[in-house]
Length: 212
Image: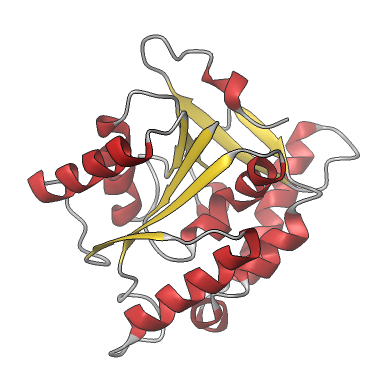
């Protein structure tokens, strides 16, 4: 299959979907990783942050032999307009994915919410929405066991040194995945990522595309 993941910021892929994406990659599927914003509004503030964060994203995805795709929207100011719609529609036409992963439309971050709407609106394949950071107001429908992929996920997340040094992300992510694993009720599942499916005509069984 062709799997497309779209995160709003350079570290979003690792913090949210990466265990699942690693699993797809290990099972031989084709993986495209898209970063929508230029990352300039991250930490620490200052000129040149875009270049640094894009280098961090490349270093992270190099662990999977993947080159990220950058849309270079303005970080912190992504809006739903004709320009962003056309860019996302062109991306979808270019990659022709079988399944898509992106942010939840109820996510805490405005950039995440806009990207979620854009990617959903330009696509006609199953779209899975990822757990919000902290799990706030998110009701999972599906859980992916990432116990075997967790260490690599964290290694990749640590490549985003600017954000790991200035935010609590490294401590937050393991706790959240342990909590979702607890909800599965299986002793062998130590870490899990959770998702819900955007239901549209003909793809109500999109869960069949999730990695086992």
